[in-house]
Image (cartoon, rainbow, N blue to C red; front, side, top):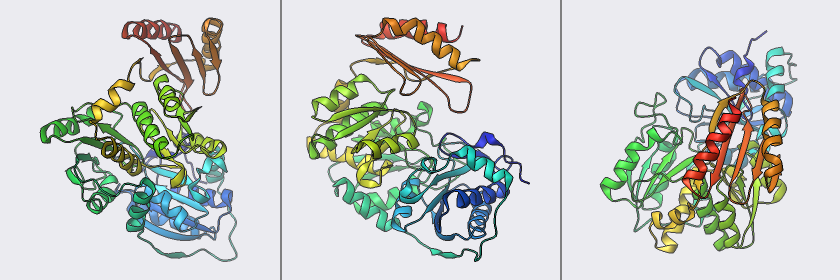
Length: 450
């Protein structure tokens, strides 16, 4: 029997270090587990640029075929291209081999069911772990086969341009850093198609990430982009993560823009063309996001953190767009998936329609002082959450349990939510002044860490 560590089964995805935690045996048995749980007949399989794909992908395909599942092999693909391909090819199962923004030694799966709906809507990762380790798989009457290799990049580019309604970048200069990740597979063709004036940074595909990790939330990875934007006088800087579903932006002054400020800007742009729609924003976002959505005539809806949960809520609520503090942006008109390319196109559309400079568009929205997310190790997570609620709940204007504990006061708020995989509490708070924010932050951290 295989011995696949439960540690690699995260809240929504699967990832671990190669080859000790995630290897050919694990990939084979996890593929079989998904085939058993989802009972699919056809699967779409893709991969990012990490070298380990060369031995892992044959194991994935064999696992699916041995389960009686036919496979479309789309080869090299960003995660948004993979989501598109699952829909275009009618896959019942989707397995994208990627470790997203994780360092080079990692690999894993972003798994979906039909329509690129996250697999956790059908089966938990804990159940997949159990099935993969038990390895009690039936022999099908007829083994599956590889239906063929499909390259849908050109189709994807046309579809994403049509979804954005932006087909011309002329008059703007962009610097785009793909961090040697999968953005370097899509962005060159996309920007060529749009006649863009683009300065490329690290477009060569290289799973060792020789220049910096492809994680734009780490401010240190943004330094080269910020310098280049100022150096060449660009209107916009763009930084992709490793699998290109997440994107962060830099204004013309070389300043990184927080993800929630982009949520507010993109919400305004989308509501300009689709008034009155629901916009989802994650509960760590500035209250300015809610205010900007209301001001633009939209209906703001707070949501939990994490792509699997947000996509489910978008389907249930009918939201047209959602944004996360972590720079994931989700679009109803692109299969309710997160898409860095589409976010970039919408932001370009906003710049072209308004004729404004990006710094002048986003800085007025940053009218509160935000702590960012701060992690603390806690022995008794439920006990600490109760202690915080007993202490702060009676003083608050409202108490929410959407994701952990959120307490709102007249002029400030905080959220404390548990990690899905570690004994951690994550604190986020916001106040009208930097001094108030720092004081509340320090007071809360003292309680959390006591």
